[in-house]
Amino acid sequence: KAGVTQTPRYLIKTRGQQVTLSCSPISGHRSVSWYQQTPGQGLQFLFEYFSETQRNKGNFPGRFSGRQFSNSRSEMNVSTLELGDSALYLCASSFGGGLIASPANTGELFFGEGSRLTVL
Amino acid sequence: QKEVEQDPGPLSVPEGAIVSLNCTYSNSAFQYFMWYRQYSRKGPELLMYTYSSGNKEDGRFTAQVDKSSKYISLFIRDSQPSDSATYLCAMRSAGGTSYGKLTFGQGTILTVHP
Image (cartoon, each protein chain N blue to C red):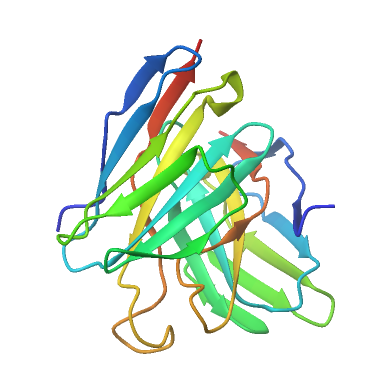
């Protein structure tokens, strides 16, 4: 089955602009999580959406926001871009429902290939 | 101090060597432990997934979790050049709404040379 699809793969923006990134999860997965990956900080959790509701949020400023649609597709938005926002933004999908230990839900996160954002 | 500490390496070994990768953590709430592999310009992919303490083996890979010491390991036997990648440990607490929130180590860059 198709994996997690992220668009765009690469983009360049200037300081002060805003950006929207898109993620299509694996069919049947209802949870979408977003991560920021940088050489200095590694992979850091941004937020998770499940059934159109944000159910967990990392320690990032309010400039970072997201949403999930009824078809489980998700978008994240970064407003007023700063140089330090340059990073690889990764989306991960999972089944996300019920007990993690249940057979239908191994808890595994399936990552996309990411959107590489460069802020000039 | 980071919740999860991982030596970033880089680590360079000859083909066929046994590789040992390690992470320590400080949050005793972590119950699920994972190792991800990330090739250049790709997203991380899950290698091993362990709940609580113990060992788990899958082919050439063995994951160990020692919750009393807050220490996890990944061993790669008979390493191959195709194992060259960044290896990330990741952890998650149990229950609640923590499904999608993993805490990652910094990642160890591994190179296996022929």
